[in-house]
Amino acid sequence: MTHAWGWEAEEAVTIAREKVANAIGAVSREIIWTSGASESINTALKGVFNSYSSRGKHIVSCVNEHQAVLVTLRYLESQGAQVTYLPVNQMGEIDLEDLKRAMTRDTILISLMAAHNEIGVIHPLEAIGKIAKEAGVFFHVDAAQACGKIPIDVEKMGIDLLSASAHKFYGPKGCGFLYVRKRNPYVNLTPLIHGSSTHESGLRAGTLAVPLIVGLAKALDIAVKEMPQESQRLISLRKRLWKGLHEKLAISLNGHSAHRLPGNLNISFEGVMASDIIIQMKGVALSAGSACSSGSNQSSHALSTLGMSEAQALSSIRFVLGRFNTEEEIDYVIGRLIEVVTKLKH
Ligand SMILES: Cc1ncc(COP(=O)(O)O)c(C=O)c1O
Image (tube, rainbow, N blue to C red):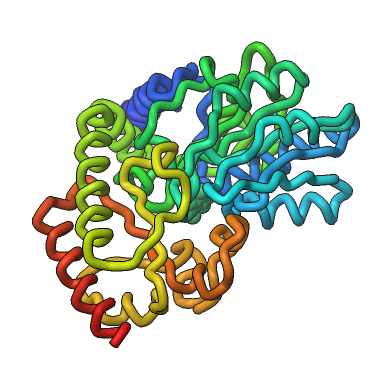
């Protein structure tokens, strides 16, 4: 950079990189800016496979990962990768013994999400990281839903690569980051986007989206600082919502009751279609299944991996509570849902 205006932008990006690195226990040079979690995931999975497939072609993941991971893995399978998809139990948890057993001499990577987008279930990252270290394989974490919501420490958790999107923690849309471990061990990746080698240590070409990057870092900074109080507040709103509905309606909880994101509640309403409920809940932003498949009328793949029938899956709604939700709003939703579900049942 040769002029003051450029230096100013460069400094803003440097500060943003430090903030993001601090938020996850990394160092600045390990943060690569991307357009979002999908691009980060593609860079991580394809990059590891391209760089290390001469060592082995086996990858371990899970049946209920997000499409961004599943579809990328399917592409890698077409390129010669062998992928083991770990099953989950009824609460959406993997068995760590299954993970240990899945490891072969050919395994190069474990890719698991930190927290599930639909059922909010949190995987035991530290224990998984330990298994990955012992086996000498890389550990990639899709933290799109977890970053800024639950504590993440790449050192403590033995994470080698981590993907995230800014808009999930109230940052701008169209921006994300990929953490790539640069020490102990150094993870070598091939770039997904080729071009100028001066950008992002040659890992991602293209002019940086400086305003988005600055917004991402500020948003993550706020989310991490507010996390202890905010997660308690969300848990209490979630409990209020569950209690209010459970007292009056036949409902069941999907996913683990404790190992889940503070703001996530996924509920099946016995004998009623979720789509019929949602249509009548005007003014409330609700979805059945994942946001990416909303409007498709298909039952959720993630819920079917828990062993649920199609009818049960089609009667499920995912509630996501966020920073701007209040107790009054929760009470309004409880009241409306009781009215709507009771009417539909009759
Ligand atoms: C768990 C998970 N992974 C990946 C993604 C993809 O994120 P993006 O659409 O920002 O690329 C999402 C988005 O909803 C997600 O929930």
